[in-house]
Image 1 (cartoon, rainbow, N blue to C red):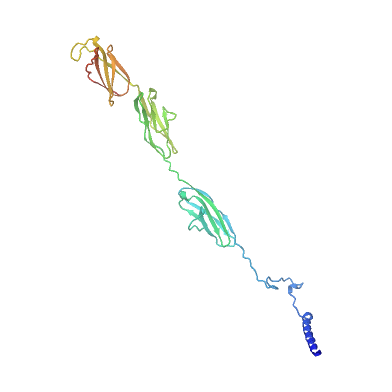
Image 2: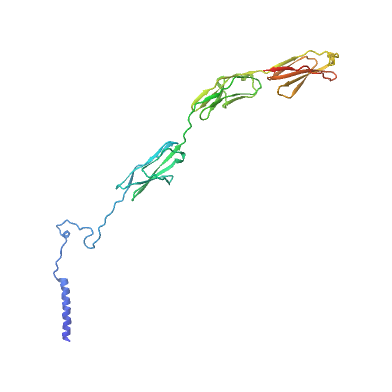
Amino acid sequence: MLSLHAYSNSKLTIIFLFMGMLSFGSIATAKPSWKDDSSTEQPTKGSGKGGGKNKTTTPISEITIVEHPVSITIMNGEKATFAVSASSSDGQEIIYQWYLNSSIINNANAASFSIESSSLSDQGEYSVSLRTPDATKTTQASLSIEATPDPVIAIEISLHPVSQTAYIQENFTLNVSATGSGTLSYQWRKNGVSLSGQIQSYLNFESLNLNDSAQYDVVISNEAGSVTSNIATLTVNPLSTIALAWDTPTARDDGSALELNDIDSYNIYISYDGDTFEDTIKIPATLNNIEFSDMPPGNYQLAIATTDTTGATGNRSETLMLIIN
């Protein structure tokens, strides 16, 4: 029993001594140079305990817009150009894309975009997107297009007002005809003085009077300037007076005698060319003449017949043709 126990102790002793050697034995160690007070060397990242890997941070590219596109206003049909100038911080290529009112413009992938001949449908907001693998920026400008104005054409009078003669109470019109660009303005004048409200291409007179006799012209204006028509002289004549006289008849149509006391009256028949109406005017037997005043110009037909005291009317006289110019 004792021998067996001794063996066990001996074994334990050996193990203990081995462990003791690990704990208290002399072991050679190397001191890092950076631990030495005389050294300035620092450990390299990733070395030493932990064995971490080296890490590198890649810088992010930035886009700087040097010149933005500028809003412009042009005339319809003119050329329009938008341009942008930009750079990236690390020299990466910048990719461009232009848009109109947020819709992509096909094949517009350069730093500038041009419209060679603009139309009204091209106006709107133009934007450009600048992109690198790391960044994107957008800038914009507007395009306004004005319609091309019509060419300015000077006034040319093709029909001047014409001098004429008229009679009082007639209606009368002076006319002018002219061409030129834009809206033509008219101002009629009487003896060189502007007539208020007379600003049409015609000058109307309703029921002429003698005071309307004058010289008339018209000044026509547009954006190119003004021209004055020829003068038209309007002569207003008073209406004519027709004077009729006749001899007192002494015989009837059948040849029998007609005494003055047997005459009751005379009938004057008057008609006007172009008018189917015939006017009959009764004249007392005591008269053998009459005047018709304010007769407008035209061709007249006149005749007379005698009515006796019994109411019988004789034949008409021969028709008198009278022309009033």
